[in-house]
Length: 292
Image (cartoon, rainbow, N blue to C red; front, top):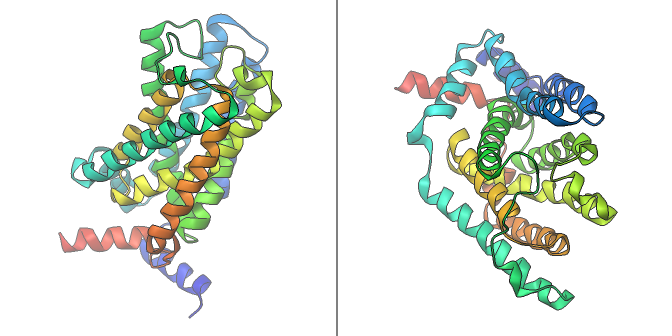
C-alpha cells in the first residue's frame, strides 16, 4: 500500500481529514481584512484592528475544530491546551537556554562588524509604541498565546498529517513568516520599524523559517503541547524586544539560528524525518484514549 492510500485509509479510520489549504486561506483572509485597513488608520481604531487580526488564526483554528464533527480532534485541542502533564519542562528550559545562547553568540559575533557590547543590556521601551510598558508586556503575552493557539491548535498538525516534520517546518515557517507582511506598513509595529533598511525587512521574513524548526522541536518534544510553545514563544519575543540588539546584529542572529537549526535537525533526525505519524495523528490519539 503506498503512502497516499495509507493516508486515506487512516483518515477514514480517524473520522477526520485535515484541510491545511483551507485553513491558511481563512487565517490569512480574516487577519488581513483587519490589518490592511489598519495601515491607513491611526490611534485606537488601528489598535483594535490589529488585535482582531492577531486573534484571527486562533479563532479560525478553534472554529475548524468545533465544526469538524471529530470528538478526537476536539479532545486533542483540550489536552494540548491544558494538559500540563504533556509539558516536558526540562526540554522547555533547554530550548530557552538554546535561544539565550543564540542571542549571546550573535552579539559576540556582531563585534566583528563594529557593533557594541552595550547590546548586553535591556532597552527602556518596546518597539511598538503608544501603549505603555505594562500594556506592551501584556501584549507580548497575549500575542504569544494567541499565535500558538492558532498555529498549534490546528495548523501544524494539518500539515504534518501529510508529510514529515522537516518539510512541515519549512512550509509552516514560510507561511507563518509571510502572514506578518501587512505589519511592515502599520505605523508603530516592530515590523514597520525595520523599514529603515530593506535588508532588515528581508532578514525578518527569512529568520522565521529556521525558527519554525526550533519551535516544531519544542512542540513535538513536549508531546504537542501548546503551553510549551507559548512559554518558548513568549521568551523569544521578550528577548527580541528587550535585549538591546541592533538590527545589524539580528541579521547575524539569523545566521546563528540557521546553524543551530542544522545541528538540531541532524541530532533529531528521527523526529524530523520519521513518517510513522503521517495520516495517523488522530488515529494515534484515539489509540491512546482506548488504552487509558
